Amino acid sequence: MKINWKRIIAREGLILLGCLVLTGGLLFVSTRIPQEDPTYIYRCSTGGHIYEVEMNGYFWPVSDSDSYNMFETVKKLYPNDFSGGIYLKVKDAYPLDFKVENVKTKYTFSERIRNVFNFLGVFILFLYPIYLIIRFVFWAIRTLRQ
Image 1 (cartoon, rainbow, N blue to C red):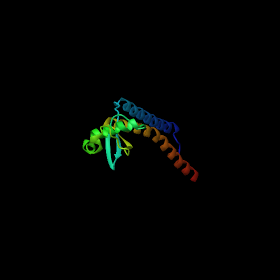
Image 2 (cartoon, rainbow, N blue to C red):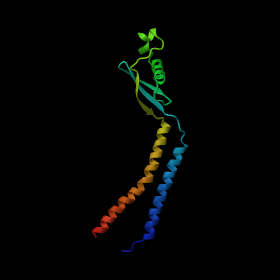
Image 3 (cartoon, one colour):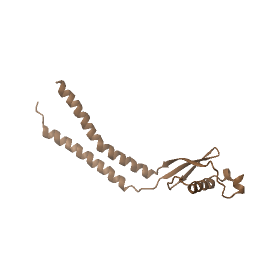
Image 4 (tube, one colour):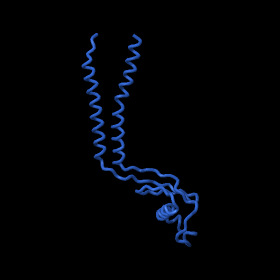
C-alpha cells in the first residue's frame, strides 16, 4: 500500500490553518464586543443579619473609613433595619461587628458573551494539537504491534 504523504500533509495543514483562522476570528469578534464594568455584590453582616449590596466599583474595605462608607450604603438600602435604637440617637453610629464577608461578580450579558468567545478561541487553539498527540499515540501503538 502506497501512502500519499503530500495529501496527508496538505489535509493536516488545511485543518490547522482552519483552526487558526477560526480562533483568530473568535478572538477578533470578542475584542469588538463593548466592554462594560461588572457589578459587584458585597455580602455584609452585622448583628446576625446578612445584607447584600450591589455596586459598580470594586473595593475591599481595608480601613475603618472604608467599612464605615460601606455601612452607610447598607443603611441607605435597608433603612428599616437601622432606624431605631442607637441609630436614632446617634447619627454616625457604627456597629463594631460590621464586616464585609465576600464579594461576588455579576457580569453583564455582553461580558458573558465576550468570555465565551475568548474561551472558545483558546479552546480551539489547543484542541487540535491535543487531538494530534492522541492520534500519534494510537498510531504508534498500532505500528509497534505489527
